[in-house]
Image (cartoon, rainbow, N blue to C red; front, side, top):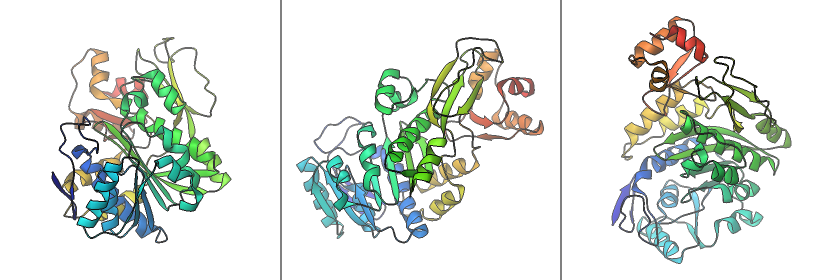
Length: 369
């Protein structure tokens, strides 16, 4: 079937839902992801004019790489499926775009120092974990990663998450943010192996995937700083109290200081620092174009991210009121009460009933209308 996104039109196999029904996979639900990718690449090139080369490491139909090539990037599209290679080549030609299409394995290309790229984009079907080390081995400037294996990332499949990301994820009411910080932690540790530090410039958890863009600094000191941004979250499932601490060694409290519960959960190591740069978000917003079908949605998401407090976890208001055995009030009234009491408070992009605040759970309970 024919699909138009942004300024390009490509041919893709017929799809049904998110199942793979053809040799070459195409997910129409990822259009927002791809629109934001184009805007982010534009914003990054504006900030770092030296960045010219782009690798679409899992090209499939080639739509992501074609859109990058159409935007002026020297694009390389890689796939180990010969049908995908043929389709990507045809889609480049259809849009009068130049690009290098390779029939190869993504890891083989990423590990090759003769093929270093300014920007590397990993958009696998499932986990990006097997490609993270290779992605940081030779990339110069920016690594973009999509992870769709949210159950392992968020702790719903605990053992799988431990195996893939070498961390302990926990399934909490802030499960989407858990996934964000598990992924960034794994990326920071992979990059540090090559004396590379990461700085997330844009990260979001949308529907059933996490997407992040990390700027790279090639210096051992920057790698040390990224490792120093890791730590652990301790969570009480009884009263929903939580705290966090920096460091690769977890020092779990013996009991919850709020309810004296002893069934505390510890997650980590997690990325505890900022997951975006506010100034860069504004650059990305300025690069959204009218030919993007998801422009309005993308703009709203960037606004939500910009207004979100920078804390390692968030709360679900309905879960709190449910735990208290009371009906929830409107979010505006609720957040207003926290602010009137002198606390910072914001909505989050993770869901309509989620919020962040610098108040602890006991303070929230005392203040809540």
